[in-house]
View 1 (cartoon, rainbow, N blue to C red):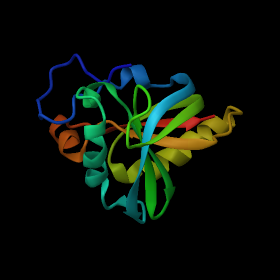
View 2 (cartoon, rainbow, N blue to C red):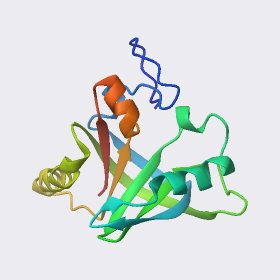
View 3 (tube, helix red, strand yellow):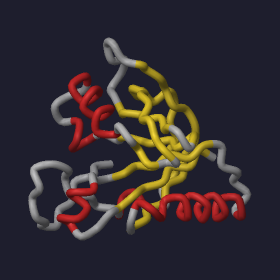
View 4 (cartoon, rainbow, N blue to C red):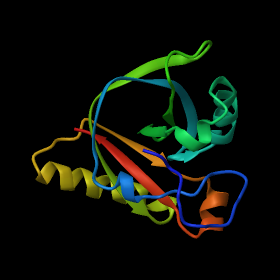
Length: 161
């Protein structure tokens, strides 16, 4: 799947436009999908050094990273979150890991402050279908500056079921 959109939108020189259509209600099966993992410090789920962590890791990845790659966030504490940068394989000098499992996706649009509500709603929806959620990841498709420029703030939730 690509996060590029075919509809014309203002160019920001940062995040590419996002087309939510291919991501809505997908079921993905990953077998040792490679990622580079790092940690963001937070205060009550508000990231304090997200930009620093991004800048530390992006040089380790390919030049076309922002166009074709996922960055998944796993909020696992009030005080921090793990970031997973999609890779083609092991990255020298990085905390390499793999994700294996079946993932369901759902796209949401709105302000970042609603993510907690969306996670609870998505979890409830899946559990009502008999699919207990093991882990939940968020794919923030654009930075706040680009979300404002595009007039849309899409977030894709990945539930490991």
